[in-house]
Image (cartoon, rainbow, N blue to C red; front, side, top):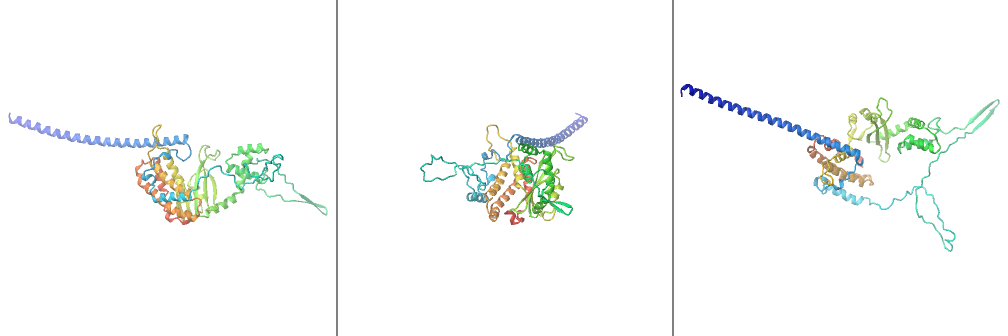
Length: 449
């Protein structure tokens, strides 16, 4: 082999080594790229799975809302195995104290039918023996054999006001003096004060529509159109406004107020669709022995409504987490209190939307929503137990039992919120509840009472 051949062979060998190195480098780069693609796609798949799980949960909730019971009591709650330490914590001092308190003050269940109120007037019907049946008796007496609740049917009548007039003659002039008629809240109105009160109570307390009242009055002989009834109600609202203003002042003078809004349907509202939501704002406040409840209608749920209703109030405001209340929190002397009814409702929704086992199988797995409801329901048990206790004893029991329960619930929420899918109903309920917590150590004693 010549030197030229050796040189060519060596050159070819070096070229082969370089090509192998290049191929290995190319292979490593391709593998890294493929791993990144796989990791990215796996992340997308995981996100889609979570999204699908959330959508399925909302679908189950909507199905429960449409076809399930509207009660917030969960039918399968008694079948859950609440024997886990985190679920109910039977060994905790607060739960033990609560059970002991329930044994002391829990009202025993009364058996049999509840008797009729003693405050109702009694009409006695005497059932007499015949002369033959009591012949030869040395004495007779009556005993109450039975009681029946009786309703006197309403009946319509026309009240005629006969106005006395006196005629006076003074020289050539005649003067007539008439007795003053009683005052009426609505001028030139054919309805008596009692009928106006009946209409208002039937509509706003009994939820009876005006067309229903129209039929009832017609059956009793009073032919009054629903248009007239509506005009009476509107005119009365103007006349009663000073009373509403006085009740509002009484409500805002105390340092504790509850407020909430609920949607209602109103057909004729300017610049609003008949199917759109309008809102009834309900507030309750004032001294505990003389509370005032006010209803305020507004087509808006915006912050300007909350600012108007709470104008002049200073103290503790209990409400939900609606963003409209953010407009008033900056005010001096106003502090926020959360509402457990709203928190509990969110956990109930998460519980209803939980994936159920197959047909014929009992649900035994304890979810985060079950645990949260178990802890919240302990607070409700306490409130039912101490409902009739004096104010100072309520304060002592809430400090002894409710405060540790609240601290335990908050600690549990903080430790478990990271273990649920962000965006699902349980996460939203936990996040909402945590945002409603306040430093209760700063609350005055009378609010605990």
